[in-house]
Image 1 (tube, rainbow, N blue to C red):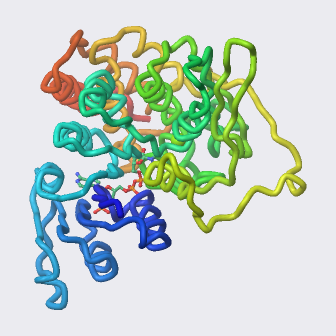
Image 2 (spheres, rainbow, N blue to C red):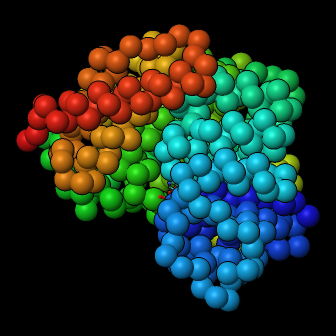
Length: 385
Ligand code: NDP
Ligand code: MG
């Protein structure tokens, strides 16, 4: 029986993780659940999963009488850290959204817990520190992001052979076939409609701008200790191949499956064992074709920024990430048009000084400086259309 804490239990990944836990209740026990403000959803999860700790950053007006004494309740800004410290879980699934998960990832590792990582922004912002902390903790970081889970799975039989190349697949998002000008002025409803995956709002916008793939290139650089020039992105609209690994002899290992996040979530939970997800299996005979395209950096300039940030090093990736969080928020609040997202990120990267060999504090400083600069650029009206 493995004890699991879920940070971000009310979100897309969190609820799918609970679905998997329910299916394998003889294997996994949820001992802590945390979210931001979705109190009704969390109350229902407490009724079903009986955690020892339940937490929200925003304190609700009231806790229903039937569950008021069912567990320990925690509220407040620093609740994720307090949950990590107080819970008896061996595994912490970090599925909050944004760099806000970074401190909790570091705390989990320093408490000797295994981290199952869906939340990609902490690796983007503090990749070197996070991977170093995992090495010290003596646990692998178990990736939940489907591409990184695919690569992790492909590497299981590596027998000490180092891959020559990682090939991250990308669906291309809702604007894959759109003209540059149309993408620039794409509407919120259009950007929020992903062709293959049903996810939280932030990652859905990132997928439409391909900034998600930029974040994933950086994520792969740290998770698999690969130089950026050996990480390729390939558009694969069917999302059947979740990513690939190429070896010196030209052999390519791929992981395939239906687009269902329960597989990578469960694999991180049960690794190295494989359990059933209850999801649909692939039917090759029903598949028309698997197709591939080169990504177009002219129409999706956000993707190129990953390589630029990695080449610059220091805290540039943290600056990219912080600026992108502000840009996505501005787009979702109708303050900028879609095409301004990568522009705001790039201008912020150019304007904020990177700190080399940063401490965790300095990563947070750069994230803060990037947010401040991005907000300043917005206030100055540079991106109003
Ligand atoms: P959602 O927006 O659906 O869920 C986010 C979760 O985090 C919610 O439970 C939310 O609580 C909680 N949360 C947000 N901010 C805070 C905070 N400050 N403190 C505590 N909890 C917080 O996001 P997703 O599930 O889609 O994504 C989560 C992460 O996983 C992201 O980093 C994303 O990039 C990554 N990911 C997601 C995939 C997917 O298929 N969804 C695939 C691959 C990676 P509340 O409900 O109260 O707001
Ligand atoms: Mg992904």
